[in-house]
Image (cartoon, rainbow, N blue to C red; front, side, top):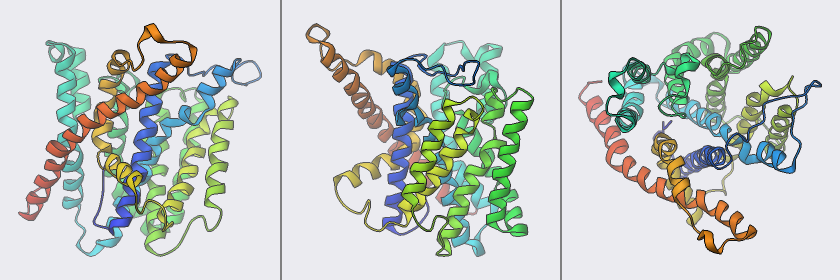
Length: 380
């Protein structure tokens, strides 16, 4: 999920800061799911209202952390923005060979390294079983998100990497629609297409299938939205002229409200995405934010390593959360138990970040450099 381009330094800092927000959201969401197993309420009563009865239910299901999964949507917006902005900036020298070469060398070598590590870390004979081999091959070719049986195998986060690779393949189709009807109509056409797919899923009772509800058909508009924002930004235009903060809060509020009712629960992604659209445009067009200071440096560094963090965090998260204890059990009371619960994910994130930084420096960054050298020589 890393597609940085040669843009002004302050612009890149903002993008990396937003990447940091996205990966922190995903990490916190997965940490909550490990610390509070089965917290997610997806059942509704006869009136179609979510069956949340306690204060704990509402906190775990309606707090911002409960919507940390939307970090994936934010990643897709960033990807669409950067790739299309690069296309607009270098259209005369744009070649599909270079485009797919950049995507391959940025993502695939680090991904394959972690994939092989996960497979051999499971069992020595994992790849010799038919199930194991099938899981491995579908992940190698990034098609494991086509069926529910393979969707979350090996690593629960890898489904979005397959989705993004498929979005790269659809980029020529997006450019075709953009050329025929303009980027605005192309984007809104994909929004309508996503809604229609959602309605069809509910009518045919296939909306609960991850392979369908989280498919490229229903997520394409998110990536296209990033491209739409890029084109507006490139032309000096804006999608949300005023009140971006208001629109962002409004759409996030609608996402939370839509979860409460069964009939609207499947539209959480739609509302969250528009919330991120407004937020992202606000960040891009704000001059004073993310300019200086230690917080900027920390967020920029986290954002730079966000792809590596995304690759490994699920593999280490569960074990580290179980093994890391900040406050000894013998001195705990109710207050200290909650402090310990709060501190554990922070310490675990620092550990995972340190591992990810090494992966970024020695694998991800090196892979990008190899790709650049090969493109200079006219190779893929």
